[in-house]
Length: 115
Image (cartoon, rainbow, N blue to C red; front, side, top):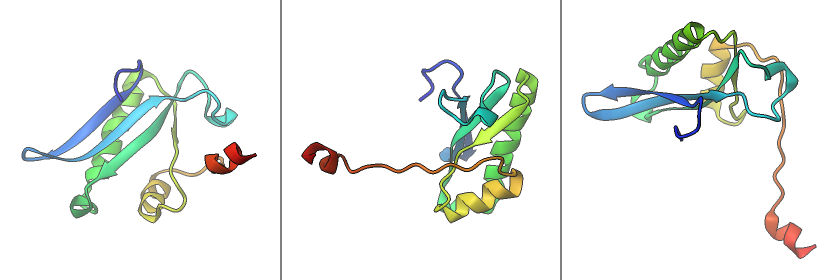
């Protein structure tokens, strides 16, 4: 996960237990034009253990990410989350305003192989 250049992660701990993380990467090729560019980064991984949700851990992780990004000279941040993940929607939409939406359709490879 962190072997690639530009990948950075933050961890949240309670005593000796990892309870959450947030990961950022450079914006990937093929992303929408509005989120492409040198001064942009992407939050593309975040998780907090269910029993620690609602305690401010994700907000603190996001704060650390945004502070780091400002110090590194980034001016824009993209976040990619699944619309069906209601907890993620609630969190991300509280902190960001959508500038674009995308839809991905995955084909069942078994069907493709049968053609």
